Image (cartoon, rainbow, N blue to C red; front, side):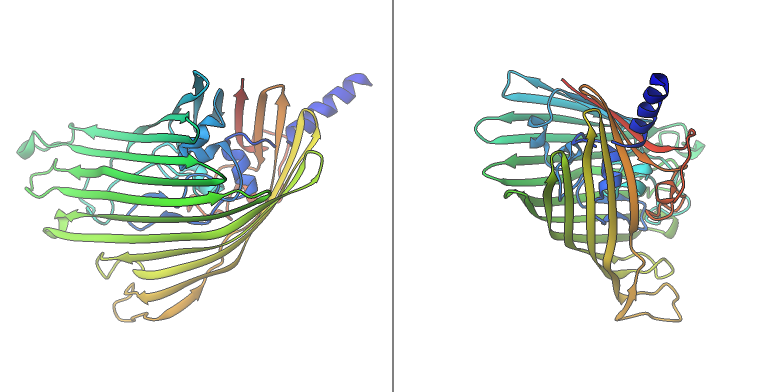
Length: 416
């Protein structure tokens, strides 16, 4: 009888659990901001790499001052990424994180929009079909933070790839390169939590062919924002601007460019309804303004997208070693307004609006705790859909079983 009870407890613990650790599994369930932009150029960009309306250790990627709150911590996101944050001399800390998001738009984007591989993925319509695909590789994030009366932190991200073996006989010195650099700075002072970030010196170039004009693509990003904590309330504002462009030598020296401006304004609230049980709520307005100078034959060009998301989530400690988690995300309003679109040159679509399905998800997850060792999970069956839809993947299926597909996402963290 005791054996059966122990087995039942262990199985239950694998099915339910929550923590404030930095895990993709936790954010996938609780929810995230809706704007994770993958424009037609193949550029990966997100409004903020983490959660704006609740606390999570993953937020160090947009405000590195949180490293001071999350030091002496190591985490592994199974099959994806991981890193550690170490405190030194009480007032300082550093961190190293590896393979954040990998090199393409992977499960992080599908399950928790906002967490995405850094930088340029590969060639796109800027460079034309003649360019050589080359993803960035081995992304690494470095952190340094301190508490000198005010908490502050610095973050530097880097990814790179180079290939000289694709050069032609007519251009033996040619090569293909793809590099990404990004820096962030954040602070915490009197409840205010401002942050700022910049992507710089990030570009793709292919001069391996016989032509004198290379295929190129460049990425420039700027983001800034602030959160304010007052009791259980967390109002927030964030802005991001990115511009990517390049030269397509497949069409002579055609220079084209896309420009994206994103805004977010909202408020989150954390209500303690019982000991160890919290209800998290969020409502906001997210705006995505997109302009593209690509050829008319390409996809819809100039438009503005407005999203009003509603998030409700609950985390509760069922026992000292078990936390249950559930979250619901629903777009109350999601609409695109087209200023100009020439997808079909014979049918101009100007000054039109289109309602979008948006995101609707109802997810559950768990944290199983062995002292300071926590395992977060998100229930699902299988990998993400190829199209990257946040509503067409294993996490949003209604069924799951006791097999290898029970936990679509698993993260293990340890604080000491």
